[in-house]
Length: 336
Image 1: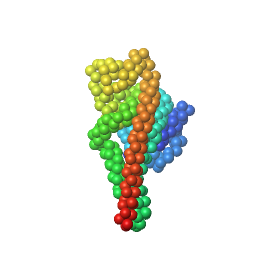
Image 2: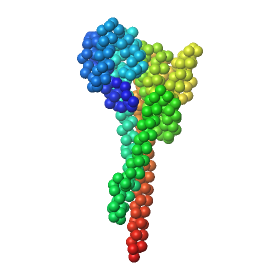
Image 3: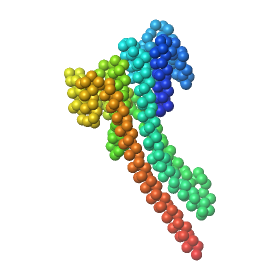
Image 4: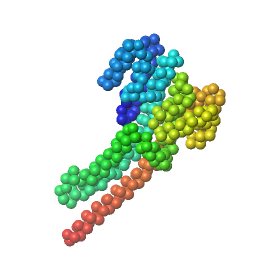
């Protein structure tokens, strides 16, 4: 159930997997029988379920049977399931996991939708010189082929895609932390998009904390695993600082109130929730608020980026058209 690039579809599949398990657990069906009733969409998942069933039949618990199998379920999931089994609330924990991945799928899907149009316009700008250039050659009757006309633009796109996939691959490899850290700093530096993506990450952190604490994970491990699940070097660094201060005796509220890298609202609502014994409700509110705010700011940034790309496209078209007609009239004057 893991892959190089996480897509909304992959997260939705994981959400559905946990939803089915949760429903069957609530109905009193055992873990082994529940797994037998689930029909996985891929053969690899079916193989993993069969391995789990084999280990369950030998007397292992569900959490023991999935322990160490990082190629199937991430550390976040395994810790949640172990905590759910220990507390006797496995069905609730599986339901929370389902909501966690549904939340993540929705978030990624909405971000991709907001970025799709500006990216489409960038493709158009790169291909536009080739389109107009090919039209010029048809008028001039030079006989240039379609491939020759589009080869330079397609080459630029190929290089761009190559860079993107290389960066994604390196970011997922064992040495990927350094690459992700550099890329994250670059993203955070981009006006508009940087703040929006920070808010989206804070939303994910809040929801992950809510899920882990509900499953019975202690606050120290909850922060560590919620940050790791985000795959954000920025949040991982903040969580390490949080854990160091927990270890020297500070309360979570004291630590959060002093951590200026988090927005003021996050600090205030987290501290209030902890002091009032309603941290669970506060984390849910924070997850929803920063999801909405992140997407709102992303829409604004995308609108501005689209306007800029439109301007570049208009200037490029004007330049190419003027150049075409100047060359056309120049060739007529030379003939005369």
